[in-house]
Image 1: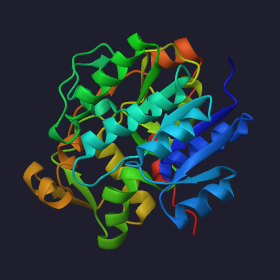
Image 2: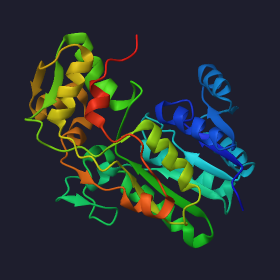
Image 3: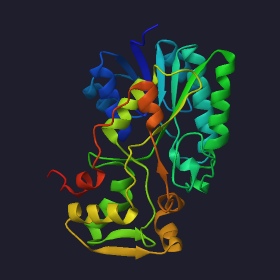
Image 4: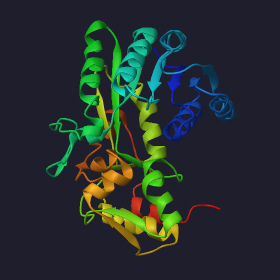
Length: 294
């Protein structure tokens, strides 16, 4: 049955706004969870119908998903108990949407350091900050045996449109201090994806087979040093870095610093082959080097 109406969590966020736009661009009606008046206003401006509630309001999630043909879970509860909250929300959405597609957000960091270029079948060795995802994703995928239709999309580091982790931990601090944070020598590789491209993958994943998993990454494997250099040009401080040891980075950024230091090279070939995904943004360093619009 074609998907004509989708319920989205996290729709007012960085990736969520682009995903809502991608859904609407394909003529799909969107309802989306709004945890505040500001979120509701953002969603309304995008053209989605806000549904007031939070990720812990399981009855709201279940009811909203039951009135849709599919569901996409982008929201995250960053309070204590993230893993438990994510699993409860996922179960509520799966229960609500029934046999319709449910697309869950994972992340390629669960693979840890990779030995060369790897795909979704590689062994997983997550840093502490994402280790909780392993049990959650196993639980979600097991729901396929009960007639549910779970699909997991695992984005790389999402960039573009002046937002996300790149802005929060690297570009923003660079504009404030005049130097871009650099962890270690920066020789490690990142798996990356543009925000518009990952939004398209979420939409395409609604048509994926139950139990599928997709790495949402471009075929680029830039080094952290290259990313930092590009950010420096955009931030108006070319060539100026603030070297941080892993311990200093952890003190500054928290547990996520370990993930930023991973050496990852991954391929999104499965999504391209099975879903026809065609990333349009394939020059991350050039895009990151562009000054943000004023």
